[in-house]
Amino acid sequence: MADKRTPEWMQRKERGSMFWLRVMRWISLTFGRSASRLIVYGIALYFLLAVAPARAALREFLPRVLGRPAGWLDLYRHILAFASTIHDRTYLLNDCFEEFDLRQIGAEVLHELHARDGGFFLFGAHVGSFEVMRSLARANPRLKVSMAMYPDNARLINSALSAINPDAMQDIIPLGRLDSMLEVHNRLIEGAMVGILADRASGDDAYETLDFLGSPAHFPSGPFRMAAMLRHPVFFMIGLYRGGKRYDVHFEQIADFSQVGPRERDAAIRAAMESYVRVLEKHVRAAPHNWFNFFDFWKSARAEHS
Image: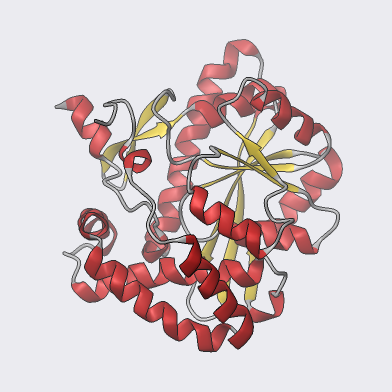
């Protein structure tokens, strides 16, 4: 039985197989994005019909942003957006940037800070595509992006991405080890941007309860405490899929821990988390079908107060 401290997202088993992922990769690179996207429509339909927990999670989430109950077309459109971003990783990891219309919003401040001060944190979420940012950085030799993540999360997909491009997985910092923070610190000193998806906690993470889309939800405080202890700025980053070939990549600074002392640290962490959630909510409302947390995001907070 699952440990009660283990979040629901960590209890979910991955779907699919390495064989079919490799087949899809071959089809995508052989026949091109337009032709292979026809298969994506069928994959999305299968996922919609076969995965009842995902449907239940979307019926919990979508009314919060749509202002009405979610119908089958809403569910299919949502899952199709998710399948499209997974499909597009094949091209992004192989530097096929000409396939996409990539638009950056707020990147000027980010580039100025990077040129002046070097490394900082990029906090994203399981919304849209973080792969867009990694690919943009890969196309610009001056930018280095490292992803800090739990290595056991989505092992099947990570293996497939590594097979697509052997260099794609060399910029991963595994979290949960004794030397994880030291490795993050070294990357920042080298001038890298360290990306973390800061919306999900592991079972042992500390968290804050913050209002999100009208109800209390748990958000992990670990990424923010790391940024505060290492005393680096934090940018919110999100790559929203807008349909077709278009992605809108937004950057917004939400904290600067470089001048925060130990006495002010807790208050600064709380303020940064509130800013993160506020900006996340703004973008989720603007592009609701980019929300890729296919579980009851508010369940743990409800259980705590029941």
